Amino acid sequence: MRDKDSNKTKVTDKIAKTVTKVAKQTATATQKAASGTKNTIKSVVNGAKKPIYLDYSASTPVDKAVLDEMIPYFCENFGNANSMHSFGQTGGVALENSRKQVAQLFGVGSNEIYFTSGGTESDNWAIKGIMGARKDRTKLITSSVEHAAIMSSAEQVAKSGKEVVYLPVDEDGLVLPEYLQNAIDDNTALVSVMLANNEVGTIQPVAKLAEIAHKHGAYFHTDAVQAVGSMRVYPRELGVDLMSASGHKIYGPKGIGMLYVKNGVKIDRFMIGGHQERSMRGGTTNVPVVVGFAKALEIALRDLDKNTKQIAELRDMLVDGIMSQVPYVHYNGHKTLRLPQNASFSFDYIEGEAILMLLDLKGIACSSGSACSSGSLSPSHVLLAMNKPIEQAHGSLRFSLGKHTTKQDIEYTIQSVVDTCKELRKISPLFLDMGSNGTEI
Amino acid sequence: MYNQKVIDEFRNPQNAHEMPDADCVGEVGGPECGDIMRVYLKIKDGVVTDASFLTFGCASAIATSSVATRLVKGKTIAEALKVTNKQVVQELGELPAQKYHCSVLAEEAIKDAIDNYYKQHPELKQ
Image (cartoon, rainbow over all chains, first blue to last red; front, side, top):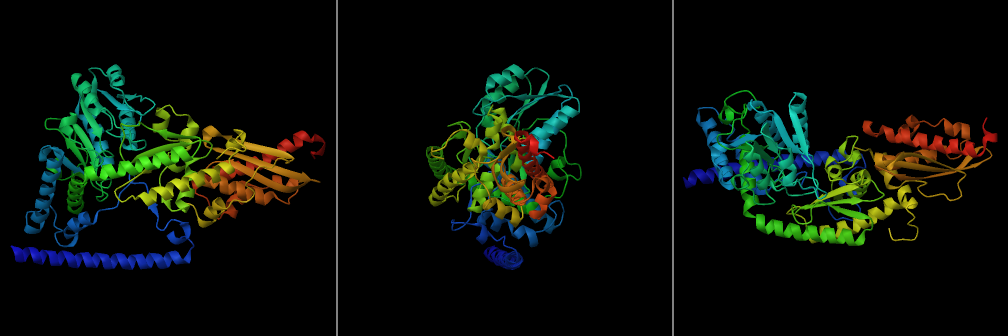
């Protein structure tokens, strides 16, 4: 057994070395290609020793330990997890072990976990799968601050002739239980409210909302994509019937997510094909990313207390720095019911995409809810739902910290935000009209 | 998303300042759209002798304002009126499709300024 294991390690090492070699070759090729243009990281970064990544809510880097766990399932244990032979069975065992591990970490049964291609697929499946399966009820209730995956799925439900209600939020982005109480009736098939908001970090009172849904015989789904890895999430304690999660938000790979479906909940199949995922989701299982997801979740929950404490401290430092040193700025979202990594601001008189681009040139990566950066005509639907003036939505900026964020990163970021706001306000007609001549910008 | 020319123009915009002694001012857009361009022109003997801008907006709004003010400097009013958004885009090499409206705003801001100039000096309108 020991020999077999050590042999396995050697093979894994060899693959890892090959992967590293290929990665190095690719990097050199990219470097060569980039040197032709001026657009190398080096030339765009002013001042920061290395680019500072403050967009962890968009995606996270894969942990080395996660990658190590995945690598054997690309070239060595590549079999189709559904095949009967030993190649397939190795993958099948890894798949089911991962499912058991994920289920255990969430405190649920492994037959309640379905792997998907990501948070978006899980959300699509939850909404359409339940609305399709419940023939007796035709109403869907969701909130006005959901992720695009829920919003678009809800629109499709509405197009099919069913009733969709979008619950309002208060100015902190909270869906108050009374809002649901007022909207729900005995025709409601499903209520879907996210556990934590991706733009402003507000944590919703999901347990209370699920209780109200159940009183009226409706199912409750929560999109926990942003929450998992940043807070303790147990579907049974929350009392939800369905829950979406994603791998790449927790230092795992992209292309993997899951949907928790409580035993007994009737849901339509989403992806039709073979008998994978207990015939509920066809398609050859992507074993390496499933294995990576389980490992990432294990690490995220093992280190959760330590990481969230450190991240929240740095986030508070960033918020204090910006709020005290930049005039005409608003801090968006709830002060305490909030994800530890999230800091969302609106800067008056300047536009979010311009701030984002200028910060990027200074070596800082973040995101904005402005129309320009979203690629749509209107700015952040989340900030508008929170009743923020449209100008504040245009001037919004989100920083999301992660476990690799350092105190130096935050110090440099505060200074860069101060400078960037000054630079952009200097050429802003709105700022000039505000009559701020002589005041500190 | 942006090419290097747009980035450079955004990073180091030219003519980005108020002009208290301008002969005319043009302004297009609104805060609710996320874009406001204000163009200041100095005009002497029918020639645009100086141009500057203040812009609230995204990186390409700032870059196109910078290019447009540069393009009209030294031109006669008739020539300045012929500066199109296509020329602004050409100067920048290219703009992402969803940013074309920024170049349109830049053209309109120039035209609005000249319009206002003629309103003050109707006798000069040919």
